[in-house]
Image 1 (cartoon, rainbow, N blue to C red):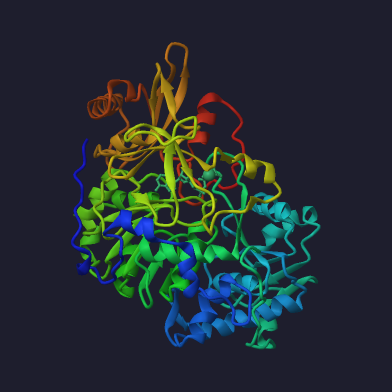
Image 2 (cartoon, rainbow, N blue to C red):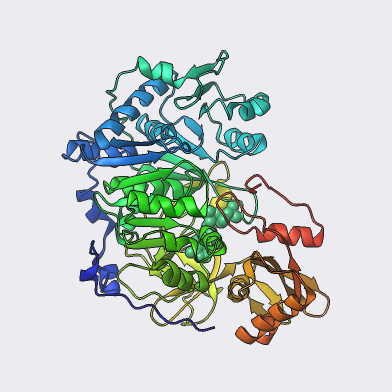
Length: 582
Ligand code: ATP
Ligand code: MG
């Protein structure tokens, strides 16, 4: 189905203005160096991401602004100003140093979305160490793989989660110290030798700490990728990435001083740090965090209660909201939200249309990866949105769709999605896999591993991961277009599409479909769905095989794991499932 372009008001109507109306002009004139006048570094020398997020605001008179509002599972709400946050961070940084943390050491954070996760991560950076955030839902093996690979020296965790670390402790010889935080817990934890109580240690710690004078190219944070296509890789980023976070948070998400902002991502995933922390805080925005997990009603209530201005979420969450129906949102008011955005996997055009119709919000899709560290392609608040497109490249990077020779493809022609190396938040290595890192750079480009096409207006359209593109009787079919066509059908909640080997056609399109409540998984419905897709897409692209399943396998960051669907279909080993959602 062809979707109509969503036209935007003139940007003067937006609360915050960007200069992107003239997108080509903005791209031609932007230089990363110009940001050095804002992100000036530590007075007297050195550059530290944590300093740019918090201390700079205190030094420049913004210390009294609200920085962080946290809503606990029990409904309690707490707010910290930049000044208050600085003192929490300083105390933890002092504790880390007392426990033996030295510049360059890896310190992992294995916590629910409690304030200590946010303060502890910024304290790690401030102490000159490298932070490694982990999803709190990780099992012992997932923790072991990452902590072991990174050679982490310390881990900050909670009484509820520490048992998972102990299960694999023997395989973590480099792990010296376990710091346990229990501020909101029962206080009943019995401390073992080698464990430190953060609350006790902090009580005796100074709230003054001199930020370590790291340089721009020193490692700051490592994030393991989502594991959608295989074993997660530890993408390592440097302090200078702040330039990328600051700039893209402004121009792609409209973040500014005081903006009330909710990023739904957990810091275990790169979106939860780059845009849950660094992007908003380098811009002095007010970050809101909900400790509890997804629940449609709770989410809507959170937006209304906190008068969220800017909301950044993911396609899987939007599809879950769609699944929860159209009556629920009628009970809430979303008028405060003036910008909504989405990232992580393809945003089905139907989801954009639904958001506009039902919530009165246009979800602005954007594209980036753990490796790129910041948004590379975006739908800007100031520009028309073409539902189904990821938007246009940001000022500051060159993003292209190229043919096998590395030459830009003509408009509408499918190719590899690549980025010109050199933007500040580009990853600097895959931890202990530098050869793999190097192999991602060819013909002067960084190869993202995604396939896409670009239209004459410069909008980029996602086709699929290069491993996921289906070759059926000589036609290339992207799983995304088939999935998007399927979810236009009222019975379909979610769909995952793979290529199934076929002796005649090489591969045929197979769809795994989960249905909305009230629809029965019948043979008739299968036929109807196949016809439905056939009418919308080319005849070769319709799913010849449809299987109904209750839910699709997803990563913790909410992405459909097509490789798992495929492995199950073919009876092959499942590979690394450490990021699989339970
Ligand atoms: P792994 O590299 O371990 O397989 P992953 O690629 O899912 O995992 P991330 O770095 O979290 O790990 O995800 C980046 C990928 O997510 C992109 O390469 C792309 O395939 C997909 N993606 C992100 N945003 C979008 C988007 N807006 N539209 C389509 N795909 C997207
Ligand atoms: Mg990837």
